[in-house]
Length: 87
Image: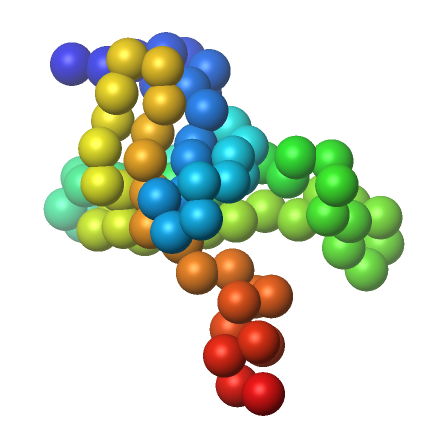
């Protein structure tokens, strides 16, 4: 079993490009099933949104590949990748 506090200190790394996305800042829980639906990655300070607030990345639970001792490996396709795929 893992405590949320232990979960939050792990680095989250995208297996698609090897980039560090940040740390888990929050989780989304389905209250009807009691299951974790997604993890929310706190912004790493480099991506600022419209009002200067750090952007959050929501990773669905199904996209978590492996939870290791120091890192959480996820599959994430960011907005910049989606834009480059279209054009």
